[in-house]
Image (cartoon, rainbow over all chains, first blue to last red; front, side, top):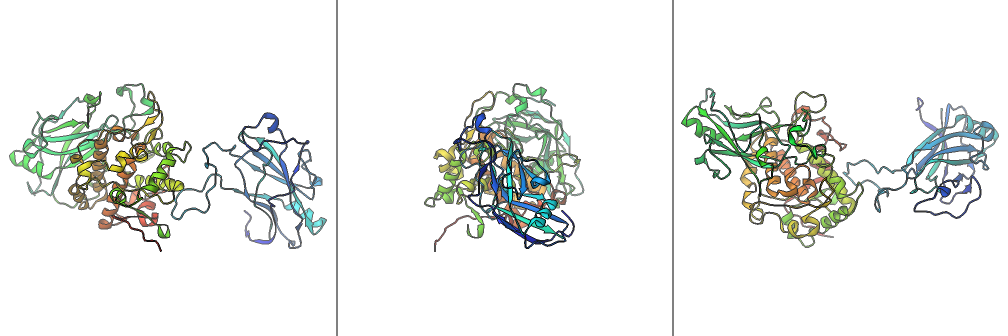
Amino acid sequence: MPENKTPRQESSAHAPETGTPEESGPGTDATQKAGPTSPDQQKKAAQKYISPKISLRGLKEPFKRADLVFDAVDHSGVTFEARVFINNEAADDKTPKTADSGYAGSFHIFGHGGCFGDVGHCEVRGSPRRYDPRPAHPLTPARKVLIATPAIRRAMAQGNEMSVTVVPIVRAGTPRCDYENVLKFDRLQVLTYA
Amino acid sequence: MSVKGRFTSPPLRLNLGPAGLNFARADIEVYGLDQSGPSYEGRIFLNNPRADAETPPLPENGYAGSFHVYGYGIWPGDIGKDRETRALQSDDIRAPIRKDVIATEAVRAAATRGPDISITIVPVYPGNPPRDANEALKLEGARIVIHEDDLFSDEDAIPA
Amino acid sequence: MANGITIRSSIESLENTPNGLDALRDGYGKMQGISDNRGWIYWSGIHGFAQFMCWHHGRAGMGDLVPYDLFLPWHRAYLLYFEHTVRDQNNDAALPWWDWTSDNAHTIGIPNSFATDPVLASGPMPAIPPDAARQTNRSSADPGGLPTADDVNKLMSLGNFVDFSTQLQDIHDSVHGWVSGDMGVVATSAFDPIFWSHHCMIDRIWCLWQLQNGVNNIPADYLDKALAPFALTVQGVLDINRLGYEYADALVTVGT
C-alpha cells in the first residue's frame, strides 16, 4: 500500500443485480445453469459487466494513485482473468489490452472450481456466531484492488464521467461450474490517494 | 525391553531422605512405556512377583495402584506390518510415554517391611484380551520416586 | 444461550429435561449424514484415523528439546471447534458432559440415551483397511470400574498443572479402556458420540481445578504453543469464559 494511504476522494458504483450483461463472444444458445457442463458449454463466453455511468466530478488532481476496487467478488467457480476497460462498452475478449482501447488492467480470480460438498457446503455463513473462533468460510467473497492510475487519469481527461466494462476470460474450471455467469460482485468503487 | 504378559523389576533399594518413612508422597514411575498397541490397565504390585490378572487388587496383595494405557491401536502406515518394524521417532506421537502412579501408602507399607522393593506390573484388558495381548506391555523400566514434602515444584513436573 | 454464552450441562440433567437432548440429536444426526468437511467423519478424523492430530502425553515438538504436554488445552480447542460445527447444524446444541463418577453411572454405565438412541449410541466410521466403513461399537466393562468422585477430588489438591494433568490424563485413559471397543483406542475413539461427552467431563474437571488453582496455572513455556490444526494457542484457551461457554449442573430456561 502507498504511504499515507488515506482515501481522499471516492466515487462508487454499485454492481446492479441485473447489470447489462452482454456476451463477449459469439452468439449463444441456452445453457444449463447447474449440473455437469459439456466442453462446448465450457467454451461459451462469459457474460461481461458494464457499469452505469460513474461521475468523476469528485476526483481532483493531484493524486498519486487511483484504484478500482471490486467488493465481495465471488470466487466459488471458475478461474478467470477479469479485463477492465474504461469507456469501452463494446470491449470483449478480442479487444487489445492497450491504452487506446481503454484497458485499465486486469484482476484475477483463482476459483474454487464449483461445489464439491454436500448440500449447504458452499453456503457462506452470515455474521460469525459470537465466540466462534473458526476462520470465516473459505468462500467468503473477496476484495480485489486494481491499481488503474493512468487509465483513470485518461478518463478524467476525457470527461466528467466514465463507464467500467469488465470482460471475464475463463482460464480453468470443472463441470461443476457455471461458465456464463462468472463475474459476481457487490460494489465497485473508484478511490484515489494523494 | 520386550516383556510378555508381566513385568517384574529387580529389588529396588529406596533412598529415603531425612524425613525417613514420613515422606509426603511416593510415586511409581513407569517409563519408556509403549502406547502403540491395545489399551489396558497396568496394575502395580509391590513385592509380589507372582501377581497376575487374577490377583485381587488389594493392599494385602501389595497392590499399589494402576495406570492406564490408551493405546493407538491402528496406524495407517503400519497396516500390514508387524509391530517390530514400526519406526517410532522421538517426536512421533506414538513414542513411548511415562506414567506416574501416586502410591504413597503402598510404598510406605512396603518400605516399613524392608528397604528393597520389587515392582510387578500386570496388564489387564477390558473384555477379551486382544490377540497381541502378550506383547502389549513393553517398557524400559520402573522406579520409585520419593517426595519429602508436598511442594511439587516445576522441577519435579516433567510431563508423563 | 444468552449473550452467546453456551451452557454445557450433564447428560443426566438433559435426560431429565423434556426435549433436553433434541438439539444435540439433531446436530449430531445431521453431521453424521454429511460427507464433506462439516461432517462427522471429517471432524472425528482429526483426532485419530486418519489425521492423528490429537495430543496425548508429553512429547517434544519440532525443534524442542524439553517435552511438554498439551493434552488438556488441545482437547479444549478440539471440543470448541467441534461444538461450533455441531451448532452450524442446530444452533441450540451444546456438548453435554458425561459424569462417570455419578451414582447413576456407577449403576448403569453408559447413559441411557447414549446406549439406546441411534444417533448417540454409535457414529459412522470410514473404511480403515482391511475393514469396510461401519458404525462404532463398544464393549463396556462393569460400571463399578468407572472412576469415582474420590478419584477426582484427589486431583483437586494437586497444585502443579503438569502433575494434575498427568493424573487426570490417566483417569481419562481408564475411561477409554472402560468403554472399550472403538472408544478404547486412539485411532477410532472420536467416531463414538460418547467421546465428546467424555472429553467434556475431562474439560470440566480442568475448569473446576482452575477455579481452585488459578486460570493461568500452567507452565509459562506452554502459553505460546500452537494447538494445531486450530487457530488457537494454549494462552487462548485457558479461560472458558473468554471462549464463550460455561458448565452448569442443571439448566432450566424460562422464556419471557
